[in-house]
Image (cartoon, rainbow, N blue to C red):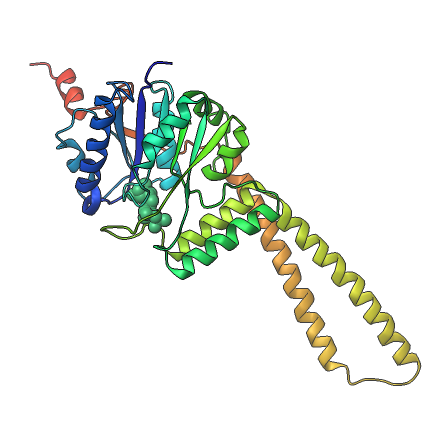
Length: 331
Ligand code: UDP
Ligand code: MG
């Protein structure tokens, strides 16, 4: 096999604080890899600007490296959609694509190792964190609990793997066949089932700027992951409902015999507790059903997951405003 055309995809949302450093580091790495003939000379970096409101796009345009390319989305579409936009743009052009976050918390020295594993015939190579020392205790324990829970309810996740991975063009074409709207890439990719491998690395702290995943977003991401892949929560609610029906029938029978035996109870406590309990369970059940119906609602619309404003990668959808103006001028 010849040395592969590698595209590194980096989603960026308001990353002006880290971007220059990221450009520098990834640029240097790519230069070295091209020099060592590890990757094809055409290899490039594809930054996806996810509707940033700061200078992210300008910094990209001013880069000194010719292999820095950009895809500008019309608006903020979210990390998963921005990443997906990059992957889909690259799938017909590159031999393999590596995705990494703009803050370079993931160790870029794992990239050459990923390419080595790819050359050995793996279509997907997962970057896996060997330690999570740099994460807060809270993030570490909640993340671990999440992976355990997901595995329990039958969702296959690669433990301690986020979105730092290599995918071959073939794997990306398979991925493009998954038409769902609610993207949870780290759940989808293992479903593809092509030969895969892992590379271990140590995750660093974010150097500058702040996390774009505050607790609220993290929770909604986790909840999305669960409800996009499993109906286990619905089953759980059904089971709880069934159990409470059985229990309350038994309690009802007990109450009736007590009544006929003449031991009339004041009964207020048991009554009020059951009202609250049943009411709560019903609400829980309805809410959960609503969640899935909501999913169906967004899925059936088949809305595009993102729109590209400027494409400086494939140049297929290029809509440079200047070109438009010149084309319509008549004088
Ligand atoms: N990101 C994005 N769109 C968003 C939010 C985040 O493209 O709406 C990008 C962000 O620029 C970064 C990556 O997704 O490259 C991961 O975000 P972050 O590092 O803030 O998440 P954390 O590492 O804290 O989980
Ligand atoms: Mg980060």
